[in-house]
Length: 383
Image (cartoon, rainbow, N blue to C red; front, top):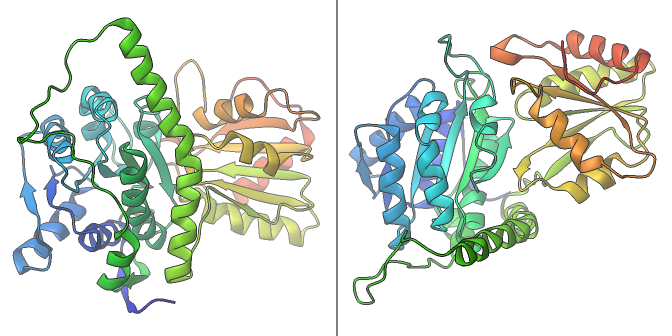
């Protein structure tokens, strides 16, 4: 374990500490519940002299990301954070950022989207951005959020794509837990090898974002796809390197008690902690159940998912999100990933926890029992 200190931090303050350790030069931010504590902690670090960065407070989240892109293209390390409607307001500029190959790191605090107005955990906001070209990580705990933000800088600057690290509102963002904060020297050593590509240089003027031919545009999209393909290996390497320094590793996905599982629960984010409790209780009852926690959602680690779930009779996907007309986003992504797999699992999809509805371990146990007794439906069902 590396030197450092253990502090009682909520998920948002853990992210702020990660941003401080990464030494970004430019941090454009705009407050929005429940992300605001990230901004507040960063500005406190800055005011005390503990964080040397240019803090920008533009008039909206759209302008925040518009400020991030040129800073990143000029070679600065850039961090920002948002949530819910703020992320939706950024939608247009999210495409600009990935298209520009700007290695921005952003924390998104998963929160319901309007209307109606609400403030509870729901992953629809970030999952709705799955086609914008941003790498997407989902974190279960404050410790994982801190570690993942630091890993995100290494991934972003290696493959030259922006990275979004999401954690659930309140369950992670405002929940206090002991968090190991590594020493500054550890973070510096971890990020020392990152090459900062400077796309905009006054000594070598160039245009960016200009009109191109259809053929040029297609080649550009192919290059983004190739970078996404590289991300799988780069993210695994970044996780291994972090493990060597800190002893903490997460992988692209985590298998929990899956080796002899009759049914495997698949989930994102904070629900995985509750699912572990449910799995342990089911095992005590004689039900061979396991958990597959998906940490990297974009690019989707399809081959790893196929290997992890090969030979499993039933899979139960829990979605804390809702795509109207489709159902659970993770449910249908997983069905696509497993398509054509010999003896593929029966995939059951349940919308549960949507809008922040509390999901307890007993609820998951009931859903597992129902899945084992019933044939899967092509559409997601409401749990």
